[in-house]
Image 1: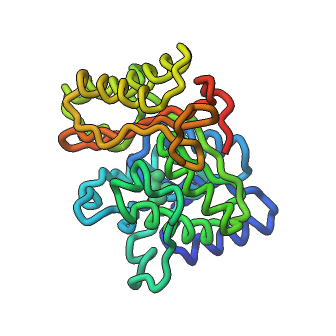
Image 2: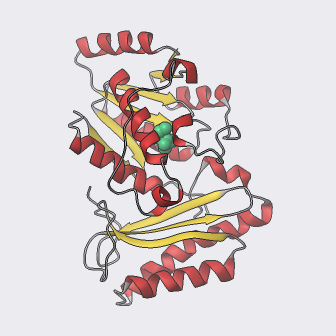
Length: 290
Ligand code: PAF
């Protein structure tokens, strides 16, 4: 695996790869890698001749009171994991390399962001698509890989790729979970021992929703209420949101009659956890389309 720290070197490398007509699979990350990330690499490895991963904690997507400075980082460990999973090129730029000057042009997301995390984190998705535009230009991937856990991010990137004709294919990879069902996340390290025990209830609450649908309930408001009650009775976390929306368009729905997402965000003392299930109207999670 080759580690590349500058945009210039990454672009020269990509030029050489393209001359050989190899396909590039790209996995953008903010590091502190876990099985959620390596599942993306494993899928990229299967579908491409070359795999590029980036690790860059992007300041543009953190609000002023968010955890940019405290975001967990471990470059040495990440390099080892990336190499073990067959990454060919690890792009590791610094903030100065990516943003040498204050940007005079950036991207603004106007659709799919007035709900879920976009509502609680204003500007977050504009920061995400701005950095991804840069990273896509630098790495010129044929295929890009994102985790289903960050489903709103996938929905926004799907729109960006379609609206702005990025010549690449987006792949949404299923959420990787701990043995008990908690979604893997770099932020899980912030949970106290007792919060960690409670955190699995988020997953159980999503399954409660799925069971309601299997039992014939198709009123989103009733399901959302049940899920909220469940989380409140079984965790000490504060609910940021529980929402049911169409997916990937993220529109409110009065009746569950098409593919949809139930998404939750819960704030624990130092960790804000998100999770979701995307289902077809009958509650099945197998054939999700973008
Ligand atoms: O999902 C992430 O880790 C980040 O939002 C991404 C896509 C790497 C952009 O900084």
